[in-house]
Image (cartoon, rainbow over the protein chains, first blue to last red):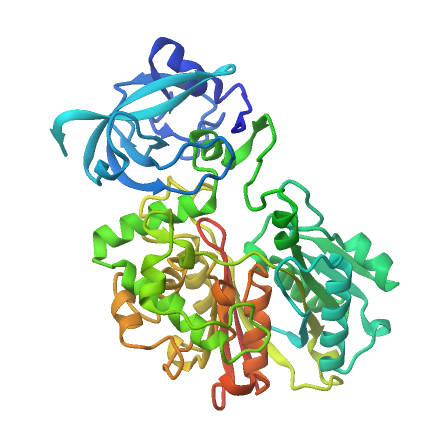
Length: 135
Length: 387
């Protein structure tokens, strides 16, 4: 069993947004900087006015790896993990496993859309390829 | 800089030794003290990375307290440094301690029993495994299936391959070079020849990194003695002057948000290092570069300016870093063939080279060495010079 994220006031929106199929990213209310991982202060302007906002849920693969090693006894391998530049949130990447295509089919520049799977109190993100789209 | 390394020592490291960590530590201390011409009574400071930690089995079985107790030390200063410029942190703060007069001879140590811990069925090197919840930067990796640093290094390598045309063969050359060095070092755990066919045929861990791109969990310990400049003059070996330290970090504490993941914290620390000295990369005779995964070696080479960004694959293919190269890297076999002592083994080897004590693999006339530890956002670098 993988450990789940500890929920905090600043990260709860991200980890529970999947219940409404929403990718929630923190933004600064003063300077509009996208802030990830989420935190209570904007690192650019020090504003305390930081709050989560829904973004489109799409993005472009910046990099990836295909994991072949079963780090836990119940881990099914291989699977791809993608590091994705998130649309509408400059500078933010969301790293998540890829579903909906063969692990070896994942490539840099590939367009992805977010999906979620529930686990305990949280909804874990997954990336799934947007068919027929390339960056 | 008014601090020096005056002694280093390593225990007989091995796989699944079953020996208590403290015995490894005591052996390493004996050897370091003998090399320095000091006794335990001379040691008045102690420092380690990260301190006693049981979240990953065998990763850090000893804290400063247990070692003080076991060795009967009476210290003026002690610290464990889990949150600093990589595994270099205890060496750095020990240097600061002797420069501020808090101590004269600081025993810095790193002890691991990951091999025995894995063999006992408690898989090591997986942060947070077995816990229900995880916080901090790991919470953005482990819950989404990126459980191992092999995954994090894997996506860095994927991006680097994509941008610069590096191939697995280039990383294979790093692994093969380290194995060739290991075969000249009786203390290295891997002594069998390694061919490119062996390297390419080994099982994949996390693309593009295979088994021989990963360092090797071992049982063992290393000790590095950091001394005040005046106290160092009384020691048996020529002092290795700490010419400069590099520890800057200019990006977030994450493994995936840095804007350019073909660079890492190493690049910030390396700029910092060279800004504090008149020495240049061309003055360096021998290098100890963190190789928890093979991809870190080209990234550190570029960070430190031994070649330009994207040029490491050619630098490696030219034979610059292997046996007989102009800039030999990890001459003891590194962590991939020597065993993972979390950077302390690399520093030990760098010091042996500067003392002319590296046996069959000695780099003739080596006087200046650079040692660099860490991967991802974790990085610390040191320039050492024998006057």
